[in-house]
Image 1 (cartoon, rainbow, N blue to C red):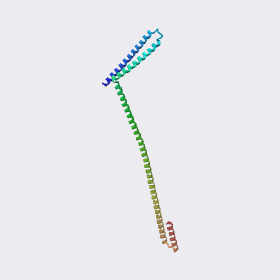
Image 2 (image 1 turned 135 degrees about the horizontal axis):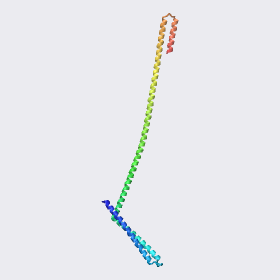
Image 3 (image 1 turned 90 degrees about the vertical axis):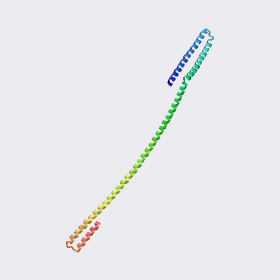
Image 4 (image 1 turned 135 degrees about the vertical axis):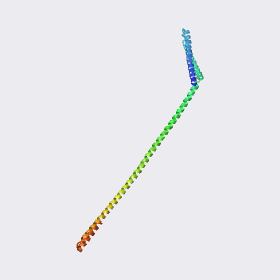
Amino acid sequence: MLRKQMRSRRYLFLVLVAFFAVFSVLLYGVAIGGEGTQESTHEGVQEGAHEEDRSGDLRDLLYRFINFALLVIILFVAIKKSGAMGFFSRRVEEIKEKLESLKNEKEESENRYRDIEKKLRDFEEERKDIIEQFKKEGMVEKEKIIAEAKERVQRILEQAELTIQNEMQSARDRLKQEVLDLAAQKAREILSKEITDEDQDNLVNEFIERVDKIH
């Protein structure tokens, strides 16, 4: 319903404009005709030619001014009656509302953009903190692994040294036992034979020297 009313008002406005245009053309034609009649009447009079031209120019200017005034009045009345003023006012309000809406959307977009920028900066800072934390934890873990490795190496060395000492002690003990066995065997051989006191002293001294060398 509203669209039909607006359409009829537009048609009325166009009709009024067309009527005014035709009316203006007719008025201008009448003015030109009057001017031509006056010029033909005084065609033979050269003394009043310039004066007639000036009066014709003034009449033409007057007709143009009247036409313009009528145009303004008719347009004003037509626009007022057809509701075009309300239409233009509504359009102006709609444009203002649209501009306000666009302004609000722009502000919201800028706010979202700033929020996204802030989140990106926070994420970058958090990423750096995480990487730094990983580096610190990696260094701590590395130092821990190195310390454990050194401790294991130290235990292995100590165990190896203890093993070597035990092996050396065992070898000494075996050597002593072998010497003692050999000495006992020699003693049995000597006892089984007749020996002099000098031979016994020599054997004892030899045994003592061997025992001292072992220790």
